[in-house]
Amino acid sequence: MTNNEYRSGCPINLTLETLGDRWSLIVIRDIMFGNHRSFGALLTHSTEKIASNILADRLKRLVDEGLLSKTDDPTHKQKFVYSLTEKAIDLVPLLAHMGAWGRRHLPASRELSVRAELLEAGGPQLWSDFMDELKARHLGTPYVAHGPTVGERLQAAYEAVLASENADHART
Amino acid sequence: MTNNEYRSGCPINLTLETLGDRWSLIVIRDIMFGNHRSFGALLTHSTEKIASNILADRLKRLVDEGLLSKTDDPTHKQKFVYSLTEKAIDLVPLLAHMGAWGRRHLPASRELSVRAELLEAGGPQLWSDFMDELKARHLGTPYVAHGPTVGERLQAAYEAVLASENADHART
Image (cartoon, rainbow over all chains, first blue to last red; front, side, top):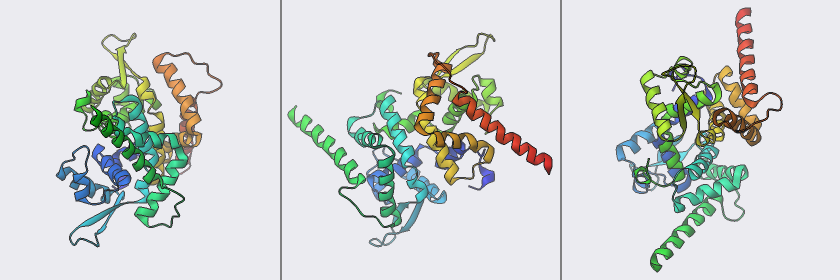
């Protein structure tokens, strides 16, 4: 958007206008934490069952707003890979706070809360490490891993809860 | 909403579904930082020129979601006063991050950025102090002020920038 199209220059308003409706942040969440990088992967793995026309519209909008970049998929002709821009990677602390608030005040499910819990407990240092990893993965900046990455730790914690829930089901 | 009405139990999704569209957070911002507590005050002082039907709808929605409480105005029959609940006051860190992100990445105006800048610079300690003040003002919890409150400091900084801009205009 150009400056004149915003309803005010308040930074909170600008953020809300740029992010648009909730589906835009859901798509960014799935690219950021799930590493789903194509239209098909985002549609198939959508926990909230996003509709294909909404997904197509929000991907286009996010590219237009400079939050995603879109490149050809080298392994599939006629397919595209979506990457987070630095502007989108800078949303990590905001998403961490959204997860923390939702966990505290709303009926969050156990298996979908474990990543939010780790992000909240890790605080600004963990968010910064995670942002460095995302920059390496999405922007190709150099990165040297020391032990498991934050992304791997978040995923492992999520899978551990899933496994323990499956074990609980098997016992009943 | 009841649990079954959410599209998933992910805490980020729950937060986004509960907050609804951007106007809900704009209304919370105006009650929180501007202390506009009635329908009329919110409509008149809306920097983004919210439409009256949207304002009425979002106020109702925010009360239904437990983010605002609505009481009779003792000074005006047939009028109401809106107060933030603890759930809404807990959004201070989220709004601080939204302001910080908008200031960094979007064309924020100088006079509407100064409060976001102070909130960002003050960090978690300032947010916590501000939340204590909001609890005193909106929930009636005891509070002892030591010097100017965070609310007063934010307002004073905003007015100082406005005054300096008016002086600039007067010189040209």
